[in-house]
Length: 113
Image (cartoon, rainbow, N blue to C red):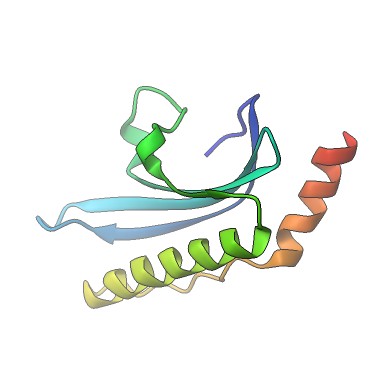
């Protein structure tokens, strides 16, 4: 997902899998910071086929003020999707989201560097 003016995507993971019909699909899970100091976790299936890069509201699975809550939600979602991909024979190694990976972009975003 690309950065939008009203928010900043700080981290994302991409999983390659297959849908119920066996057609390849891409699942993107990301953490972003929205205006008003809100953390958001999004999940999108095949965003490359959409007309707009702006995710619809139903792509967001979490919005809240606590970074730890966002990390917990993002990692749980990532684990679930990775498990499904492995069951479909597409085991992929993806690193979990980490607090440290979000703090540096947060500092740059907050201080305008």
